[in-house]
Image (cartoon, rainbow over all chains, first blue to last red; front, side, top):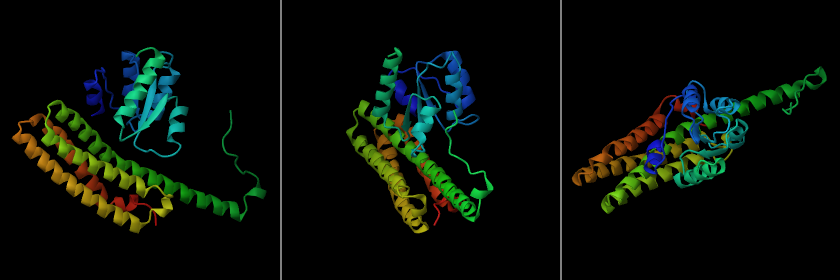
Length: 110
Length: 165
């Protein structure tokens, strides 16, 4: 659903359905930004983010963590896993777009 | 760097009270975990209802169908109401989310979900009349999310998931 909304805005989106797949896909496709669902199967988003940030090829790709937990401490946990920003589901799409734009501008991909 | 919480290891610090306090903190930790899991489970279908209704709103607005827009916004409003219900249930400490509050919460959610399903039916009919069949699968996704939330409210495991109290 989110990928469709982003595609409607002109973003090119590749989707991984599991954490390990996301890590491999990021290495192959080198995206400008990653939206990381933290509840992914196989390896969760926290671990996938750590792996991406530990690997030189993917360390600089901005990651926005997305979680439906919305509990206090989640933001800090996401940032300590290496994520660059954090948002909660249900996604406030306008707010997410502004975070995406800000991170893309910061990384020079915007 | 080791900056974690200090642990008591000496016999002098492991008398009766610390053991009680450990059991108490484990109980609290389980309650927090349970509340966290339940909140996550309940927010997921609500996120689908909101996300798909926003997607529908964009599509309906693009095709300039004001008659459909009213119903789509009603669905979105009901989704927001559900989200407020879920968040309110967990606003207080987990222990405060008692069984009584849980039952009242379920009643209110069922009312909203019933209204949502009715709105989805009306939207499907209206979209079909206006030959907007492209909307059908997203309306179906909202209906499926309603069913998922109802199942979660009714499932036997929801009594295990429900907040303590």
